[in-house]
Image 1: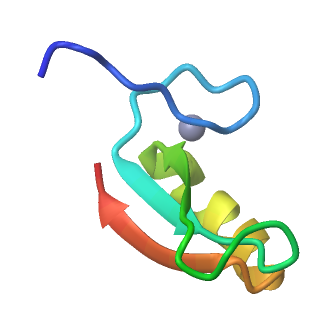
Image 2 (image 1 turned 120 degrees about the vertical axis):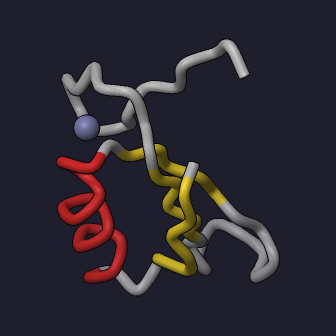
Length: 62
Ligand SMILES: [Zn+2]
């Protein structure tokens, strides 16, 4: 893999090491998954953001 994917957190330029898979039931069908990429520093805050809205479905290594 040659591409480096960057963390989705605002202003962050670090390479992503995690994928947060989420779904907003108001916008998406239940089997749809949106993906946010996260570095180690932002995995927790992004997970908390999605988790607080009950959107978070899964977190997997990127
Ligand atoms: Zn980050």
